[in-house]
Length: 236
Image (cartoon, rainbow, N blue to C red; front, side, top):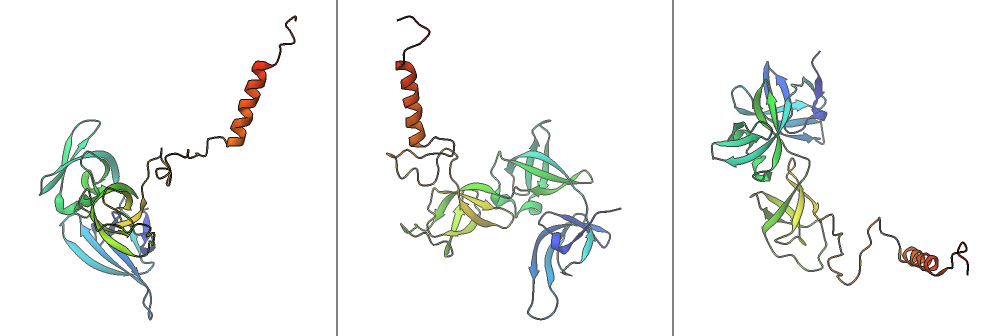
């Protein structure tokens, strides 16, 4: 029995069967009007014809889901008409039409590894992770001390993608973004440096695994006592 999904389970990149054809969900939007029942606006791409259509469904409407196979592949380059990937295990290369993944490309870096989806043995698109870290290459200067996050400005990332970011984000910052919803999540920090530590170079920042100063001092005292205490097994 084929798996069935409702509109409440839709997500970008999912494949469903409609009117005897396989369609990929390019984007969707849940709408709750003031009057009447809720519905879902979608943009679907036909894997057979390659056409893109707009469809509206009732909230909760169900469809047969088309399962896809996924394989990790390295993104090599975009030739303009096609995007080339390489299987890291076999070094085989394959191409996907640029138009099929034009929404995902702005969040993909050359040489990065992505999941390529296959339907019936043929590549149908890519499935990006829930978040990626990219550097800001162009945006208006941030205002020092402005930490308001509900006011935004456009920022261009190193891959060419443009997202809305808070006012305190500056050129050179690395930020975490959701490539599926094309939105800013937070500033990204190196695991070795916690937020705020870089601004206080003279003060050592504790990590969750580092002992407290009181415990460290007690440990040094015990070590010193062991070195200076006489050994009772030795004759005087």
